[in-house]
Length: 88
Image 1 (cartoon, rainbow, N blue to C red):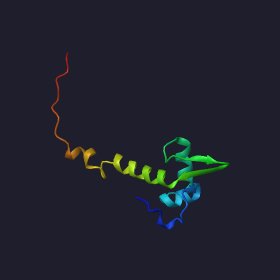
Image 2: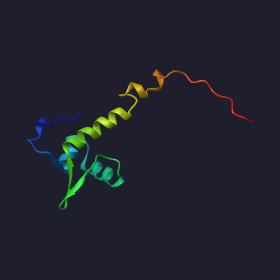
Image 3: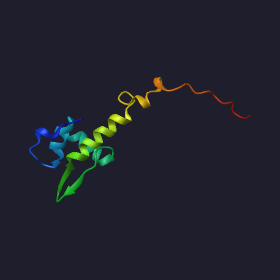
Image 4: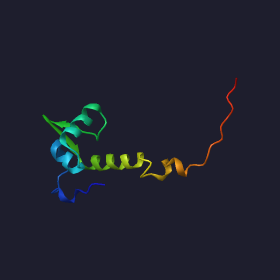
């Protein structure tokens, strides 16, 4: 998860700083925003802003949604399911 210790006490980041914080390009973050796929953002005047706590929570949610990071979602750790006969 990203660490906010390199950010000097601020609670919000603009789009370029948020992209740097996440390690993605500003264009990627812009596209995610318009597709409503990325972390939650809001407008502060004309600027798009991201709350650092929201960025951290979004990263954590992405980790939990990935079966490589979340063993509960890994199909190899799941119990085998029996097939049911379909009615004809």
